[in-house]
Length: 343
DNA sequence: CGGATTTGACCCGCGC
DNA sequence: GCGCGGGTCAAATCCG
Image (cartoon, rainbow, N blue to C red):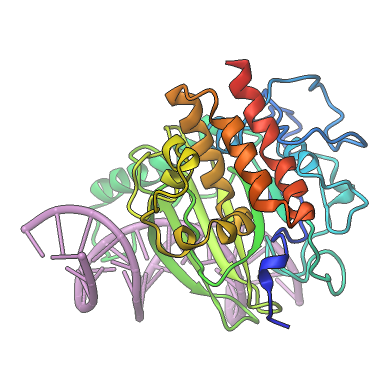
């Protein structure tokens, strides 16, 4: 059963939903641009006012905001294709709340979700109130904490963790996806600091909480392993990066897609597992989706305009034995490069 | 020694 | 009101 996992493209089922507690009714969509990594025709989850927006990369989504519904749709998740649950504020008819967990429960999707090759993106654009407020609240949470502490004298050792009282936090848009991976924390191009870990109810696997280490960046991410399918890792991003992707990070997953590595694959990559197998890396792409996008951003930023061609070429070669995978990859990559053409 | 991780305590929202 | 579970904090610890 566990043999040749490399044959699968590791998207899993996906659900889209909002974890917001209350809809303010305001349709202050988080982003003005809709994410269109692929050109997917068909029913769009976001039939709202987004027409022909510029393409944006996955990372941009995280950075600059995006219409998560569009994103989901763009991922090839037609509502009919298994586990797509999408909802918009005040329109959650499609949103099936995953049994108990607020996000990414494998069981979600209604009874025995067969693990197929479907993308797995969970979107909870619980934003509404707007990202800015949120980002502030993230920070002000602590600020108010300190203020409060200083005001009240902060006697309790930990008692004054001044969380926002009576105020709903957690308004950041969320974006979750499931991937098959042996490692919990997937390199995605950003640097994260773990700030907590909790046991997950009904699951032997803990959930880890990470925060982007970049100053003033309030993006968080949760990583947990599905208890139903221990090979599946559920990653949930919350918030948007307000900074560029760190180019050279330790594991330098990002570097894997830098022009140099793309153009000269024979130059070995420092990264251990992925480096040894480009094939593996690409197959694990969903794991590194952020990385791909991040690196793609690097391509753009560095102005390497023919990197895309090279990449396509390489991919074709890499995947000529595996048309299916390549096809899926094509779905992912090309439109990312469209933007490059654009600029 | 500085930064990252671990881990127990605390806060908060929610359901009963 | 209470208990539970999720999320966060921060001191302690680990590690390069």
